[in-house]
Image (tube, rainbow over all chains, first blue to last red; front, side):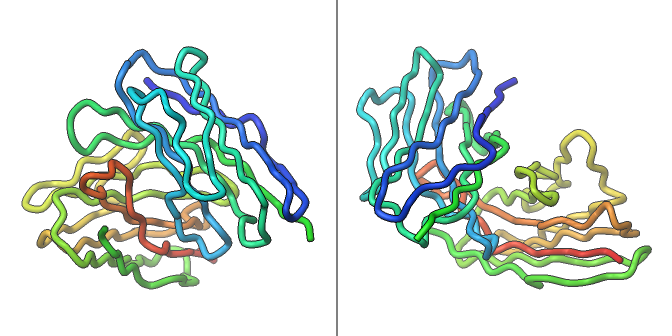
Length: 116
Length: 114
């Protein structure tokens, strides 16, 4: 079974600075998807960024980018120019690309605080 | 992408009672998923709801405690039955975002059992 690990329960960053959240995963599959979700205090789960395992190019979405290291099974999220609105829980998630409706496996989360 | 309306957003319930949570999707979807998020923890899948068939429950979750209905392709309910304080959690529904391989989530229901 796949597992997702986030080794940083809490992180903090100064406003306008850059922060990197770590995620590692374990799988025997070669084709899969990886995601970062953000959950602010409103409880809404918001998709931040996704990465297809077959793509070598790292995904970027505005201030958010990932460092995907497939051999190392590492998928870190970099947030540049941090804003107060970035404060939230961040969950790394894995999903198999085989079949349809495959379940997500979520990591334990990292709570990010942004300091003014 | 799908938009999900989930309600209630929060509730405080007495132990021994039941609460039904509703999720309405603005487009037809094959599968809907129900998650539980206990305080300070990650998301755990409760069950997958398909229209026209019984829901598929994950290990540790049973139909008698969490009955699910899926009467059509845009709507589902999750009932938390015979509640105890241990059921205090956030409950979220989600659907598969076609073509994007990510899930869209409802806004969650914060349940407190006293």
